[in-house]
Image (cartoon, rainbow, N blue to C red; front, top):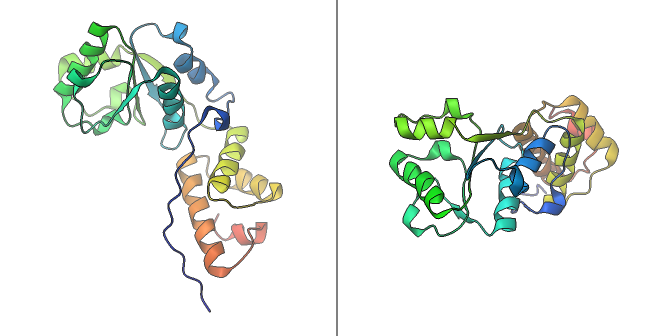
Length: 210
């Protein structure tokens, strides 16, 4: 009898305890979380999709009591403390983002923004906004190294409550694309197919997905 795979979506756990620090993100980690490293009231965190920038941003928001603002619903007048805007490239109201930038400066609070695009690649055309964004302090999460790839695999399997041997983790880490977004997709496929086929997650099983 074939077992059906249900689309169960488990929430990611964004805590300081499970953020893995290595050479590719340690500088960004220090820049974001150490207030004394902020050179102005704004900081722009940049990294590829799935690099851990949301995780790091949420750690900062929790640590500083920041309000998390959707890029689709920016209301500067409602902000009274530190503020996080994720995926700012999705903001369609450039003036609202500009007003938020100025408002945070006026009331003396910190504004953290993140994106998978560098400031120069953002799709904005308002000159005052683009100049401010390009003048922001920049924190970059670089291409993941072996340590981060393995740590992300452990986290992705653990978030799905899957027990996977260290030899499987090592095999995937050395044979898959060095993209955290691709790794998340790969773990999704392995999870679903192991459930459908009733198989343990072994090296022979994962080989067909890599």
